[in-house]
Length: 125
Image (cartoon, rainbow, N blue to C red; front, side, top):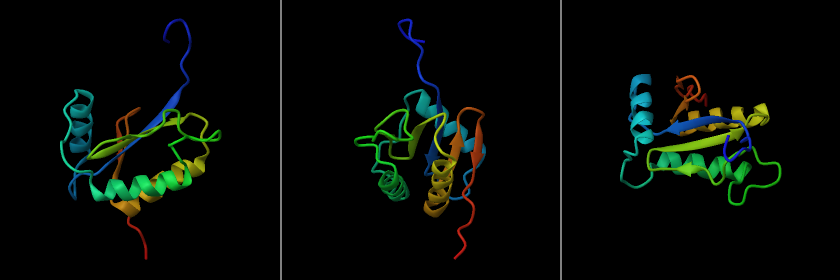
C-alpha cells in the first residue's frame, strides 16, 4: 500500500543466464546479490537477448498494450537476468511461453515468491 492506495498484485518470474549446471542455491544467491544492488557489469548474455526478443515479440513491453500480461513495463533487463512482473490474472499461455522460451534459450526460471528454481527442460528436436 502506498499513500493510502492499494497496489495491484503481481506474479513475478525471473530468467537467469548462469553457467551450465548452475545449482538452485547459485540462482538464489545471484538473486540475493541483485536485491542488494550488486550487479554484473558486462554485455547482456546472448541467451537473454534471444529470450527478450522472443517474449516481447508476442507480448510487447515498449509500449505495453491494453491486454498486456506485464504488471510492470518495460521489463527489467540486466546482463544476467530479466525480471517479469506479470498480472496475477495473466493467461496460462503466457507462463507456458515463458517456460518454453527459457528452455529454448538455456535459461533458469526463478520464482521469488517461493524460491523455486526451474531448470529448463530439454528441447526435443
